[in-house]
Image 1 (cartoon, one colour):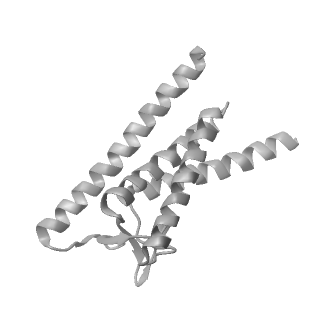
Image 2 (cartoon, rainbow, N blue to C red):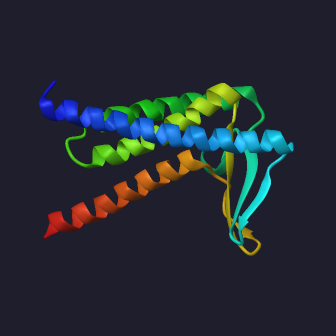
Length: 163
């Protein structure tokens, strides 16, 4: 392993540890609040609530099913995609590897919950008046940020390479 690869892998481990820890601590805090109060419906600001739901689907509650076979199939696919994302991050020779490791870290945070709780606790509820966005968690934020950064990087990279 070269010195650059070692440095990159150490940075990846630090990023992963930070994101995973922030995600776990936020979920544990919310779960503790919900357990203490028997429920959680906390109005933080006029546009932000903390409202706990248990997500058995994928991002933002899509493909939620009660059947174990479908849940297990979705979990298997998420594990497979997460492993592929890690491989791409480790093989990356540029800054995009950092975006992939951010996505990987968020995905592992949610996978941990899928295995430990058999569902992912989502609790961040942004809304404008009566229009509510999907309820999500901190891991989803990191996954979304990583994907958005990859998209922006692709647009910038393609734009500069054509000139």
